[in-house]
Image 1 (cartoon, rainbow, N blue to C red):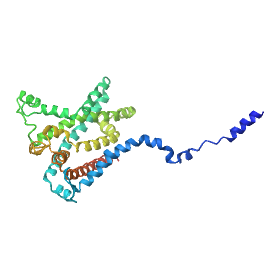
Image 2: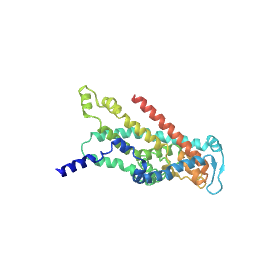
Image 3: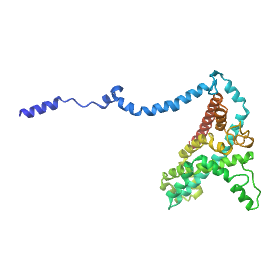
Image 4: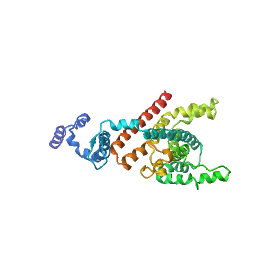
Length: 321
């Protein structure tokens, strides 16, 4: 009897477990192991993310070549940028290449995804083949395309001559340079977007298509009235990502045509037809060691990319409503 009484008394004397709200209000100093565990991410983000952003904003209002003392320039860099004809040419080139590559790429991606959704065998193989270009080194891809479109011994020109057509100087013309860059970018990213569209198609219930067939809708009507509307969130994602990626084109023209204007006056191709905004930034900052003006160009590129991404997002979101 006494032992039972002691046991009951012990049970009555044990403190109740803390309520969830009380546990949530415990002081941060008791959670220091968790904060220490996630601190490396924030340290790396501060060093390689926040500091470059802040320092580039500082450099945009100063002149610095990396060696001489930093001198204050105020808004002179941005005023010169507004009057820089080469930068305006780079903006136009970038927009033209972006349109030539993005519009066909998204249409091809949607068509390929629809065909992939219709096949029954070897789907995994097709997905790997489609995704492979997007994970291939862009430098290797650019060198490969440079050999294909070479003005004298390129595969494309040899094929044209084989059927009796004249050869084309793909890497010399104003428009042909842009076409080559657009084809390269389309080839690289069409499979990536097709896989994303295919995942979206897999999420559409099959009952919707069956109901459309019972109502007499054909394949084209079903595609435009069911597939496209239900894929609008995916289309919005691909449009915004393609805009951000396409307007930051750098490696493709840099490998094809070089970036050092001091060594090659035709940096970006003959007539600077392949000079993009980011390539011009690289040229000014790292070839000419004009880091202040390069920072101003970088923020101008950021503003242009953000503006066009916002416009595309608004257009697609409005059509969805």
